[in-house]
Image (tube, rainbow, N blue to C red; front, side, top):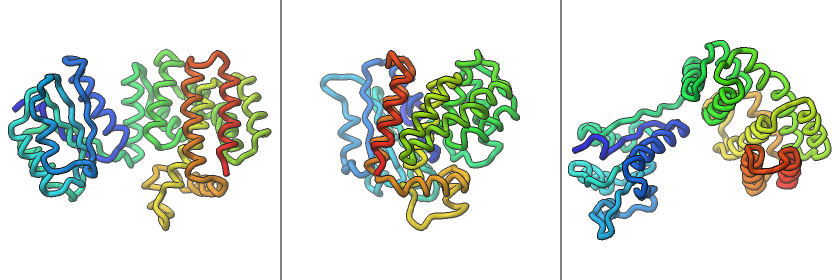
Length: 317
């Protein structure tokens, strides 16, 4: 058996899990650009489905089967995965994604014994781990940053890994790779933190006139449109994260689960009083369009940002 035929991704750090899957798919596609990627979840799987998907096709072609939430596979399906892993097909790569923990551990143990390639994606929870993550992200993008600079970026951006990764990529692109404390302060602790996040807060709170005023001031003083979109995105994602938290969760446990400081959670909870789930979804869509617009999709980024702010305000309620 080729160790690359079976891949076991273990952990619940979403960004790292998605990257691991993406790198496996990219590796397979480098050899076979036409490979078919099939995403599977326990709820949509029936006994025999794995065997069916891994059987030789009359039309040929390779496949990557991504089995999500493998810890939730029933006993029969887990046994089917292990049976297949003992004799995998040459043109199929099976990626089993397991959140870690005791549930479904027999599958992890079985695939490990079969020498599946294992990729660990544990939750990044400690301050030192986040600093290491930021420094690695900067290196990944082709730059360098000190530990103090990394801590400064975390203080400004927060602990969400996706947002940190985006900030790291943007900083390297804007600075040419030398990311020092001054660069972090210039882009995130100075004008961007005040104006970008002020625009976001005003929009989320439904204050259209004030939000547009702050937006125009930010653009006039040289804040990059991409940083304003980043602030809007963080604000709306904060609504989605806090709004989607389990009822009754609070305090340190909630802060740990969401990766947000308690003071920020309290602020978002106040902002949520004027929002519905559908409204947050519409605002997220508006921010996604704005991100594309300011990165080259629109002739006038300023107009695109004003429209986005108006759409966010209109989505409230």
